[in-house]
Amino acid sequence: MRALAIILALCAGLAHAEGHHATEVEPRVSTRTAPAISVGVGVRPFQRPAGIEAYLTVIVPPTVDKRPSLRPFVHNHLMQSLRPFVRPAAITQQARAIETARRRGQVCGDPAIQGVALGAVAGRGRCGIDSGVRVRSVAGVSLSPSATIDCRTASALKNWVTRTAAPAVGDIGGGIASLRVVSHYSCRFRNSASSGKLSEHSFGRAIDIAGIGLQNGDEITVLTDWGRGSKGRALAAMWRGACGPFGTVLGPNANRFHRDHFHFDTARYRSGSYCR
Ligand SMILES: [Zn+2]
Image (tube, rainbow, N blue to C red; front, side, top):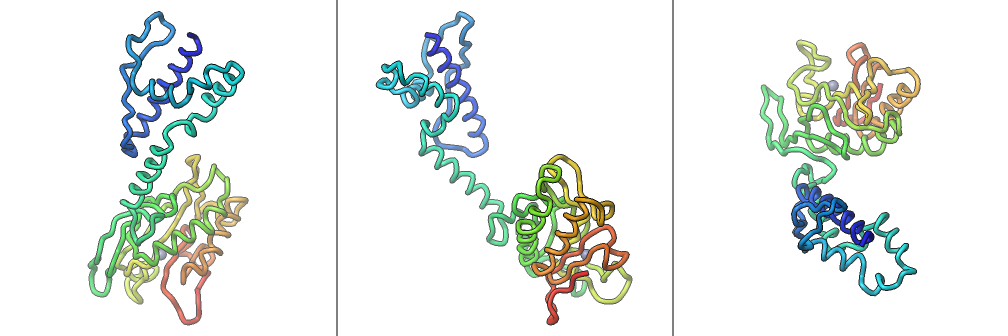
């Protein structure tokens, strides 16, 4: 009886946990159970909820239950790995639902780039983007705030995060979580001058990053960490690794305009990448 009580309690907990997932991924399988049952306070359930009945049938087949020698085995599996016993079809379905949700927010034909397609972005004079996207995250790293760029720049950014930024940060602060964006699409001249050549920002081909947010809430900032300690080394690796995916890479060594941020853009020059 006590074993049954434990199983009931476990199953009730499991059903609850599944119910939580259900709100996120809408699995088709019903996770409804009867009203909560308090086990161990003298109230017996009048009726076993159908869900629990099903779990018991799957988790503890009668043939197994009859053999006392296997009970510890069954018990251990209850404690350690419920999922392999329970409805593999629903798990597949759940994975599919997550994938569908991910694709729903994808832009640039890449599930790793999440955002909103904007189409043509009109700007003053020659400014504007033929086909712009507002990117919320790349490779699971959020952009704060979201950046309006073109797909080529979004892809370069994703590749940089995956191949360079995430490995460079490593487990500092629990790993990379976000990028602090200080400029993206903006109709202006280079170095925010009042005249001269239009910046690549004017065409959605550039993004400026001032800080790398970490999982623990800290931040690696270009202004304060450049050239200092392990965070400085991470920044140097990030700057170096951007050269290639991006055509122009500017940091604190370039000029005074870039002492507090990295400028990355996807303009291409015949001479190759320009990185300072
Ligand atoms: Zn810039």
